Length: 316
Image (cartoon, rainbow, N blue to C red):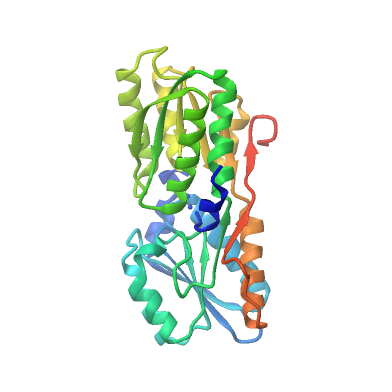
């Protein structure tokens, strides 16, 4: 499954229904900790718009606070480029460490250079890869996310069928899981009839509208499944199949969010999601940061945690 490719990079992603409160809170949120006085700032473009990012960030802040760090969260409200300025601001404010959560790190050369010059350590929480001078990125193994979600469809279809995929190539982790899924589909005789780039700003609404159109374009028998690159997208696809009465069209997702698990548990046509173990990921990241301040960094900066397939049997 091209494991060497995955080891060079890393991954990210409920519905937009649950996001209004986060958006109204404004772009800067803070939570104070205590302890040895070291401070960590978490910077993300997607705290308010991606439920998986919300969950991951909240868990990390709780873990870091429990370990005695002072913590602050900055959400740039969908603006990845603005992360550059927030990194520079964090350096100016003398934060001891910077965590980039679900940020497109390949686009943040300016900010990363500023942190590097100031010798402020930068870590990734499900960020878009490791780029100098980042010390580590902790995320789920993209091979698991792509292969487990695709295999669930392959097993249900019995080795033949037509699949639509909703991906998002600009974010490297989601791109990698889609590449893995696509390769597995092709190896197993599954025809990919649509390969559509989704929307991180409105993943559920975009996917629902898109799949409603696909269900008109492809009558029963011509479309067997929709593979969604993250649960907020799969949620929209699932809503479309339910609304139009096309529950023969299978849906899978990635992230293992609470709303996805709830739908998968009903044993309808949303047959699986792949859980990113945010508890393990965030505690591992905290371990990495502890290690850095103790004088040790991981040999491999890509720190990968296994994914877990969630079906109706283990969704509850």
